[in-house]
Length: 292
Image 1 (cartoon, helix red, strand yellow):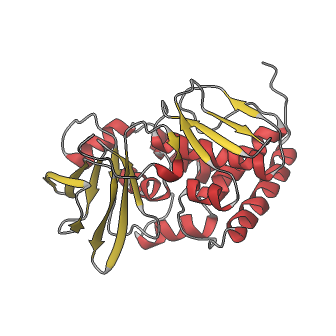
Image 2: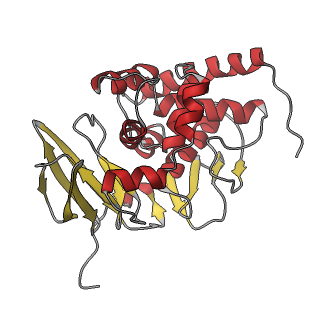
């Protein structure tokens, strides 16, 4: 594939366009410019239903006869979140049909064409707005340059993105993370970070919900481990306790549906979907009939 060369000036211009579009999209949906969001809910509010499918690619955006985004269930949940933001960017900018093929777990999708760069930047800014990211580090008493790997994992969990995606956005999108520190953070594997948080080498996907989690519901699939602050009150049958560690209580998502947790004075919804659910995203939390 021929990858067009884009100058630094052109990339900067495209990033500026993407930032303005991300701000406008949040405003149109009645969302603030700070807090983490559910990208699937945002797409619905903008008139673009999201469907999970078993296609062997990252995602597809189609404009006609009606706008629609399709995402592969073969990709990890954080990857699907970024892909949805990317495909929503194609919609916002009026692009036609786009098909993003399966790639390695990099932080970007597509090629270096202006449309793909726009979509990638839009995804970064709409998912991780500058004031929100700065606030996330500030609440934890650190900066992007001083935060450790576990803090990055917690913040990435809150914004619904991958660990490496957050690092890349801070380094290239927001330009608030020095190259040297970004490279050092990138050497830590998510597997090693999960092992530190859990105190054991476990294969399940992990969400790390610390005491500074804000705004967004806790979204996960059945089988995901969720670390909650010690003493968190859990309501509903969607989570099951599996023990505790120095960093918090460990819970497993065991059934579809919606529950609640209370961390201090903050109550959050917990929305659990079937593993590799196929269908419209809006239905992913519907409880299953135990008699079926």
